[in-house]
Length: 227
Image (cartoon, helix red, strand yellow):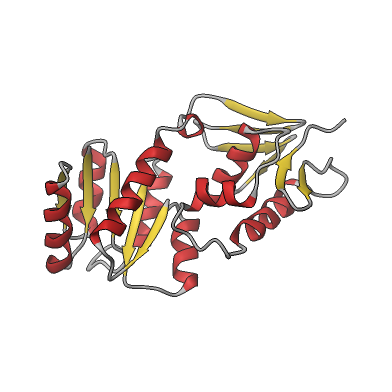
């Protein structure tokens, strides 16, 4: 497994690299965003560990660049920024998980194993068009349309919609959605699933269109084919 670490703090990078190499991972270090962007363009990586506060290109800019290029490599942000808004911003721009510094190495390892398991799941493999009524999601092109109306979704909104469509007409619990999108280590008491369902509804179910996203009281959410 090839891991790219983007980290300018030598103390942290040495600690992480030593632990990962002892765990039989192949690791390459980029000490700034410019070097990271070059390495990302040169080869495919199984996982990217990304700091936010870099000396040149900001980590958020690098996240945007990676997802703009349609690179779907799992990205774990490792940052000293612990404010909820910083975490939400990183996740919105394409991070798969967020780990606040300082952290225990076994905590990092748990995140890595969780991300690699999720990357092997069928819904992470681009090669299909998902649909419900007049809503379509082209996985490979990252294109979402409701009828002739093209929808602009954030990366996390896209992932949420994709999982709902993969499980069309099936109730998905909040816990399932939280684990699949934000990871098992995310705060189970958070209302982030409800917030993102609201975001999707505001973009998908407009005006006189059939309301596709349903709340099943006490159980969770689903995308349901209109009768």
